[in-house]
Image (cartoon, rainbow, N blue to C red; front, side, top):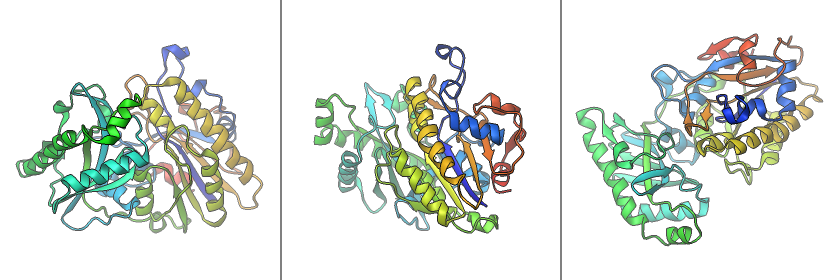
Amino acid sequence: MKYIIILGDGMAEEAIPSLGDKSPMQVANTPYMDLLALKGRSGMLSTVPKGFAPGSEIANMSLLGYDVRTDFEGRGSLEAASIGVAIQPGEMAMRCNIICIQDGLIKNHSAGHISNEEAAELVHFLEAEMGDGLSKFHVGISYRHLLVMKGGNKKIDCTPPHDVPGTPFKEVMVKALVPEAQATADALNQLILRSQELLANHPVNFKRIAEGKDPANSIWPWSPGYKPTMKTLMEQYPNVKTGSVISAVDLIKGIGIYAGLESIEVEGATGLYNTNYEGKAQAALAELRKKDFVFLHLEASDEAGHEGNVTLKIKTIEYLDSRIVGPIYEEVKTWDEPVTIAVLPDHPTYCRTKTHVNEPVPFLIFRPGLEPDEVEVYDEFAARKGAYGFLKDDEFIKAVLA
């Protein structure tokens, strides 16, 4: 038996009045996911334990069976693994967004989805101007980058920028949770303010403004932590001996690397609706031919949710179905060795609020020979009647690997 998890990041939603009180998943034309729901079994999964914010780092670790209460060490350290940065003892890693601030408000978390080339130029510039013996900036992808601090104290309150669009940035700057973390909070806030001074006059931003694009005019560090200690999937589940992760997002790659999966690069993978869907599907099939387990991650629906774009979110769900799920199913159903296919989001991302929500997500599991339940379509409401019921913690990954 082989296994593939296909994850549509942020795909789940609420009922939207403009859609006739239906969700984008209900409205979208998804014949392949509906077919797998009809032939398989469905359920609901709680991916965010009590006390945690519904971030992708928490949700994706949880659905892979990790106990984030003991295994999670911040988003930055996970992303560091993806870009090949080794976190040393005494170092604290943080995700470092490049964001757009307008009139003192956080306009968006992505600087208008800045290109890789523009972002790399800005991060190299910031490292040259602000990097020192204590702070170092590392280039990631688009707006997602890495800040490593020596001697940093992770007991600080850092607000994810995608959670607070439209908020005055000064109201959500870094705060110390304990007195001994005040120096770290002060240093980070100084970096934020200094970055705004430097980026305001950078040629990249002059060009972006002239083209009618959002300027990338501030850094925003968040999700601090140290190097995590995680067992691999192979150490936990004997029927998984080899595996791969395929994603355009450094966070997901990093989780996969710590989980013992090989990170596979796909040309043209962007994390947006224009990602190379066909390339990802073919890469997943190629890996599945030679390995036991593939974790295939698509970011586009989450980004559409953060933009509040209902129409685009529907399109991304349909793309996932027709360009990922369909080709993979049509191919593996011809194989001699059976393949288990699981499909789910990691968390809902509501277009109304433009942010993640801590609500259970729908999942389906299909494998040849599995007796189907009564669910005939795949969405947030139909899955509630599935045979798996409501799962949590490591129950989903155990059901996939059963």
